[in-house]
Length: 334
Image 1 (cartoon, rainbow, N blue to C red):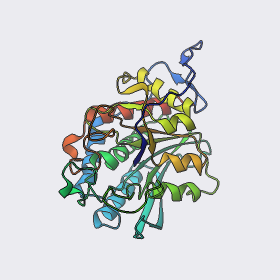
Image 2: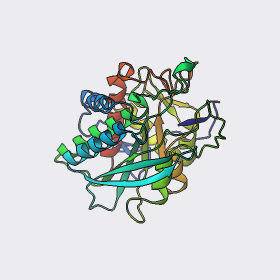
Image 3: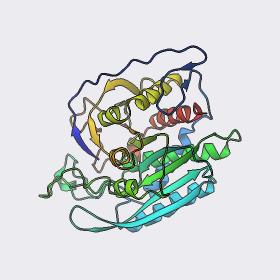
Image 4: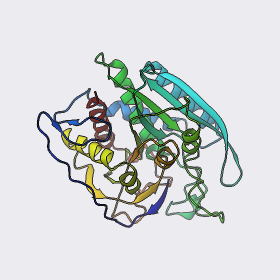
């Protein structure tokens, strides 16, 4: 993903207001967040293993064998967890004219329900480590343990828990694994980058959903949700498109004890998969994405688009904080 602005900005947002009864107001999906933890316990060890497995294929760069093998594995896991899986295959042109064999993977929990929630993440990895401190690495592929694998890993663990829970949710959940997110113009290229070279799979799905007329109450994008020392500030475009949903998710984090990870401050504005989902699919969607305000290497953290984005820098506690927060949001729905 490409940062638009790292400059802090102030948005006028309403404070969370307390309401009577056993709920706290934080609307955005139609219901309030339960004031007590609800739903199953997210197993961070399991998510970590899913992250590690993706990396075992190697960098999942577009048009590579590792990419194809990992895609098959992701679909197999969702099927194993009882979800209905639809591979959306297409060919997308990269910024340089490269024809990218792309597959958006859609896995649906309780597909028979019309009332739905969207969870999404990208599963491809950056072909070029063009933010590495050593310019000799700029044309090497990125392993993508955090930038790609972590979001998919959290979604897989949530899918496993939903399938295992006999107390079924009253809403359907669609897990959309976007492809071709990270083929954006590299820093060593002379090509003009106006932002549309990123999030290619999400751009395609947003105008060609897997089901005609697809709608969801809201969407949550998970990107770089496993890094050491990660915190999640309120991403700027999310605050523009779906401020109530941001408040809802951040309130859920506090309920389950992870308020220190979800910081009540505004971060930067980011071009990511949630932009076309908001603008083209018209589904209010937010981005849970790591923000490191004091990192000189990148506000996305020291491993972003470097050869150091490996399992050595993945933290189970971060995966757990994000996963349990999303569980709390889902199980607060009616």
